[in-house]
Image 1 (cartoon, rainbow over the protein chains, first blue to last red):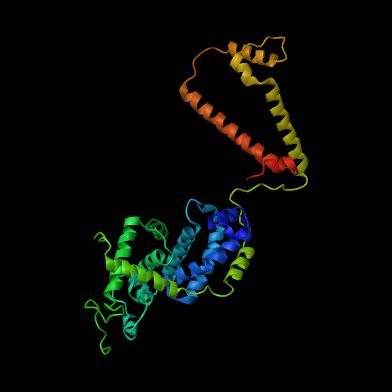
Image 2: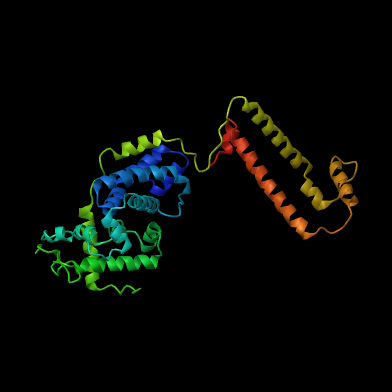
Length: 197
Length: 158
């Protein structure tokens, strides 16, 4: 078996024995998925980049706690998610605090920006209307193809709770999309901003 | 909590859209990230491996390790030659035989009063003995693993 054919889990085991080369290969393979995961969660490229780097360093220092019965990427996403949560708590931006407190069911003030665009991707819309946890769950499910059980591990929730989270996220997104797939105008639940017709 | 409804045709189409647009949404990782992570790893204190193979601390330790290993080997040889387990099983060793040590042990055990041992004493004692045995085996393995040459390689962690 050649070096390139080794699975991330095999590389992680080698890295657990102290191999920096194996860990470097893991970074090379997983930097793009991890960066995109954090970008969806943080909505800020600079924060996502900083946390990607920090997540890998944290993963290296805590590699001994990795259990190879789980996919390495799942464990890495868990490390990154925990760091993102700490980052949110430290920064405490007003909008994000409200977002977390209300579980993503609040009015998002950035919706006025959304209304100025005629068409948008579901993911740009998700960045505007979903909570961080909903976006994270949705991305892990549809971009990273993780099973609800694995998402539950990353988000530290029960699988049933993840299924509900995914269901509500899809429902909320659908509610903001018109039948032709374009972004719809403000829904009846969204209070229009005065002067922003 | 409202349970999710069974997926419909529209749900499946929407899920497909989420997958497709996620592929288009992906961005490349920032330039130089790999290098920064690796230099960060180099900068931090060396992380102890999960199952470390203890290196020799100094050259002064080497003779001690060799002597201890030799003593351990001698002990193992003695056990193998005298085979006390076999003796215990058979219990038929004469006083004049090379295995007189076994007979001595037999006599000594016979002189001990045959009072039954309380399980409150026996069980912890057995457990301690078992743990002691495991610790000894582990220590001996680590000791031999540190030896240079083929013997150390033989016991090297796989």
